[in-house]
Structures are given as C-alpha cells and as structure tokens.
Image (tube, rainbow, N blue to C red; front, top):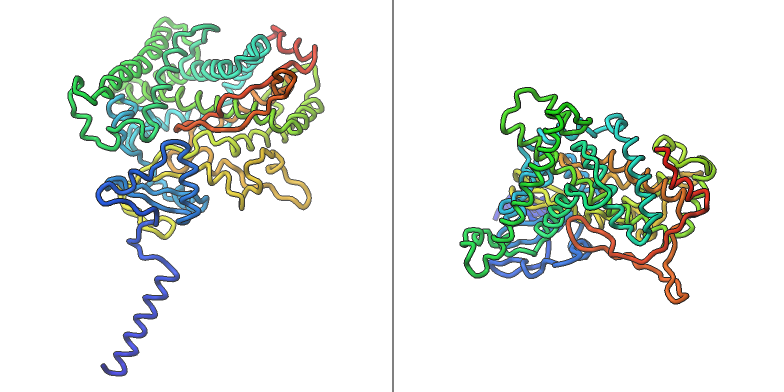
Length: 504
C-alpha cells in the first residue's frame, strides 16, 4: 500500500470516527429495550401507569427511545427539547395512528381527537378556533361560566360529599351550553347521561392493551358469534351510543333553530355561517360538536379534582390564596374572571395544577407522516410517537422538587426567576395543540377562585383522626386522581350567604 493510500485510509477512518462521536447515523433508530424475534417488545409494554415505565426507559436509554411492536415502531419522547422539535415539525408529526377498536369499530376515528391529519381535521379545527381559539373569542362565554360555577358552589354546599359528580355536572353543563345551547337539568339530564356514557366507553377503548384487536388487526374480520369475538359485539353497542351522541343533541339544536328559539352556541353559529352545506361539511360540524364534550369536560374535571386534593395536602397554599382573594375582592362578592389580572397567586395555582396533575400523562399518540430525523435519530414514516408529558412536567432539572405542589414556581421576585410555563407541554404540541385551552383555563380560574373565596378545604376526620390523602393517578388517556377523602365547609356565615344568594 502506498504511503498516500495509508494517509487516505487513516483520514477516512478519523472522519468516520469523528462523525460517529459527534453525531449519529441518519438511519440509526432511537435505542430501547431489546425485544424478541417477530413480536419485538410486546411483552415489555406496561399495562398501567405507562408514563412511569416510559420515564424509566428515558433514564436508561436517553431522552428519545423506541420499541418494536410486531413491526410497528413506537418512538417515546421524555425531553422538552425534543418535544419542541416535534412542535416545530408539526406538519409531518400531527397525524393519528389507526386504532382498530376505538377508531374503526366504534367510530371514534370521526372525532377531532382521533381524526387523521386531513381536510376534515383542518375544517374541524377551523370551527373550534373560530369559536374559542383566542382570549377575545371566549369573552362571550364567561358570564355563563361564572353562572354555572355559582351553581357548583350551591351543589357542594348542599352535598359536600358528592364533589366529583358535582364537578362533572358543572363541566358538562358548560360544554353543552357552549356547544349546543342546551340548559342541563339539575338531576338526571338525558344529554349528560348519554355523553358521559360514550366518554366512559372512549376511555376504555383507547387504553393500550385493553383489546387484542389493536395488536392483531386481522381479528376484526372474525364473525361476531365466534369465540373470542365478544369485542365486536361490544363495539357494535358502543357505536350505537356514539351515533346517538352525534345525532341527538344536533337534532335538539336544529329543532330550536327551526322554531326560531335557539340560543347562541357553536352549533347554531356554525350552521348559520355555512349556507348550502354539503353532506361532508355537515358531518364535520356534527363531529366537531360531538368532540367538544369529550375533549373538554373530562380533562377539566381531572384538573379541578386535583386542585381540591392539592388544597388539602398543602394547606399553606390555600391560606395564602384565600388571603389574596380577601385583600383584592373582599367578602361582599364572589371573585370573577374580571379579577384575574389582580390575583397573581390564583393564576399561579392554575399553572401549578396544569403541571403537577398531568391530565393526559402521555398525551395522545401522534404518527409520523414521512421519514424524518428527530433528536438526531431516524424516525420512520408511520412510527407512533408518544410524548411523556408527565415526565417533561416533572423534570427535576426544570422544576426542582417536582412532586411538591408549589405555585410560587411561577411568581418572580428579586433574585428569583419563574420556572418554565407548563403550557409548553400540558396542552399537547404541533397541529394538535388544544384549541380549547383558553376556555379550559377560564373554567379552572373561575372554579378555583370562587371555591377558595367561600370554602375551607381540609382533611376528613374519622374517629378523631385526620385522614391524610395520597395523590395517586389512575391509568388512562385522560388520567384522574384516585378518589380521596376530604372535608369542605363554608369559611363563614357570610360565605354561605354569598353561595346561597339568588342574584344571578
């Protein structure tokens, strides 16, 4: 070998080594647990609290890792910087995976949350953004939000042991009023009952590992009466309920419009704005309306329920918040959204609830629409992308002491900067970022401020012993704190009088 060839070979070797150490091969998949032949990592997948397993994989394999599910590549992101990269590249990372049970057999693929990234999706998002996409656009809903929250206070005062149901009723009332102009009955409302039933089915159907057909799609072709095909009979039953969710509230609002008595709502406005609707556009509007309840009510309830738990676990936070309300608002009226700018600590509580309680711990899966590079690794077209929002919002390097509920993280004072706003992650990313975030935050602020103004939220006492609740999250696409014991009492007779006042 000539000396020049030796130098050429050595130079090529050094360049290759340098490229390996300074960067990664563009076709190198993210690392992850070693799987089995054919089936890959099927048996490595968690069946509950999957965000904890994904976080552990992140610590072991790095901020972006991957698994193979019988040939289906799944990419798992545990890092805010990579999440931001996905956000910037939202045009190719905003599709949804095909879910056999929930999406195809039941029909939830028609909802905004599962809709593929296509023209129908963009039409639905356009309708939602027009209705509630900005702070200005939600102003018209604020009086109604405050009215419904006052009704919540009355429910809690009359029956404090029924907190979760009262929160659900309030969120359901707000969404049905906004979406369809429906005034919800105080007891046994048929619309709430129908939609809550479908929401429950959605939660079960979308939970990973619940139905074998999601891993073995060919099973969907089994005849309904064959052994092992019970999921098809269940899907048929759930599909009928979902069809009613789409058509029954729509028919109610359309009937009111025809009679000239329909109050303003998303549906009435969308139908009035679109003259000569084509069948496809009408379906888009119907499905958008049906999606709003599921997307808004369940997530809001999770955050509100977590707030009440946090007030028990961190009583000094509650006292500081109540002192701020007393100083700014006084005791002669309830706080409202108009007080938001003057209640920075209540705003900080909203931010900390969004961070501390991960309503959607892993968000909802996205799908890569084409080959790409993320975090220096190759992400093949069709890969399912999971973003571990729970881990990102509990990263100790960004949020010191991350499991402590501490609103002061988001209040600056001399010598102390605020920690990162959780909204960079908690509402999703890319073209799937929550279009209803402004309305959701308004609901949280009004609920927290009004509740703190009139109630003391403390530990339950059993046999003379204070019961200290434990914060645990239930598994699911939308996660709720597990039920806990509590005591809710009015702060004073004046507070009770404010709750019972009929001047609204």
